[in-house]
Amino acid sequence: MGNESDNGNKKNEIKNGTGKEGTEPVQELSIDFRIPGYLQKDIRELVNGIRGKANNMECLLDELQGSINMAMVEAAITKEQAEILRTYYINGGIFGNVIPIRNGG
Image (cartoon, rainbow, N blue to C red; front, top):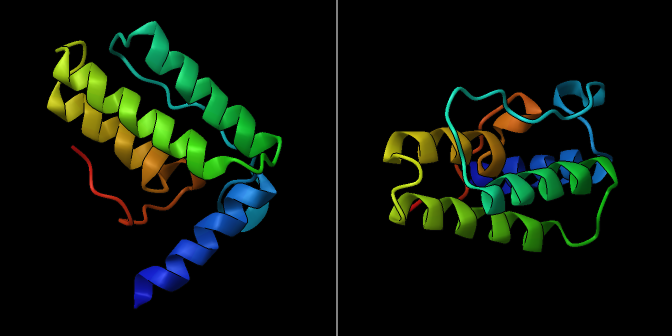
């Protein structure tokens, strides 16, 4: 019930290409671990899609989710690192809030 409203807010933030309060541009997460090139590519595409107000945000989110999962299965990142990336990019942390609307793993 609350997720429907939160989900709508997240979609508005994605559409606007802005962070919390609709004022800050979205940024890539600063991380202290290495990630595979394909994962970095999908992160950049999502961030650029948000900034450019792309119409295919669900596809970009799904691509990134798949890349995070693949990197974890390949042991390129740990489960904890995958969760950090999911929380930020998939569950709303990129907008300054976390919306638990997707399951990881």
